[in-house]
Image (cartoon, rainbow, N blue to C red; front, side, top):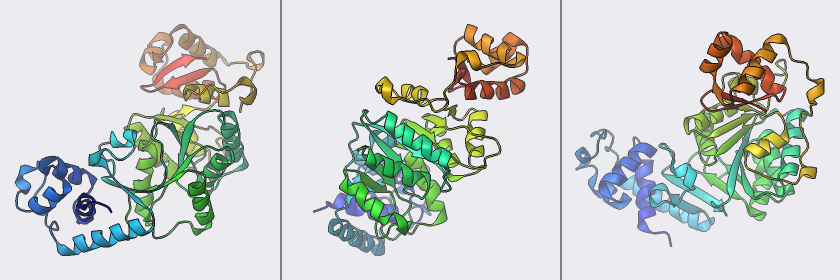
Length: 369
């Protein structure tokens, strides 16, 4: 039997102007969802930033009836209700200021395991598919959970490869558990649960997969993991928003670079160019950055290169030698060292990253490889 605290939580979150942030403000003020439900409408002045209009819906009987119906639905369908303020949602997600007040969960989620979010376009190419396959092959001896969004394309491939390599996988949905979108992935969602994975959503059973829900969903994918990998995406693709959330949460972001003429590499290249993601040069470099230590025979380089075969241009050589002589040098300091404007240096650094000669860190810092 689900306790009344969850009943009041669902009712409170259903109120028109009570989003995740206002929800947490009220619970912090009144100590529980039940107390917030019973007192906030009259005593809203106790909570900073909460006005009369914000609490107007609190206490309405229709929201309690909705919550009762929702709890019955969850009990019938083996759905667990997780409340953030009771520390029931994943730890890293809990740290995000705009984390969901409520998470609905099907299946098992071992929060002690490392988590890697992997996202990308629905229009995956053979290049993206090859990368995903090689990544899972290289990390099959590591213990972690893969996170994605159960969309077609990259997401689907991530979940399927996870199942193939016995990696627990979590799908974050953009709708409630009354349906499965896209319907083509219904069997895949069932397989995820059968193989010990998880389905998560912040949306109750009344919520359809509306367009805005997908962006909202992406913040969970970014917030639940310390690292996000963007495989392929176009300019302005949904995965760019996931990377932006990950940057806001101060998480690592990696992007798979590609030809500037390939439409679904352009978003990745842009993230790298804008220093919002580190370029993936080899699978080994990526797994090292993630803290994995797979056996050498299973680590194949995605972009094999030989020091002898790389011929740097004059400006590339200048920038590379300066970075080599000054490990983790900042962009501004580098510009001063070689007397070249920073906007002229950035494209050269991107070229060196693609050649596997340079690695970028947060804060626009660089080191030679």
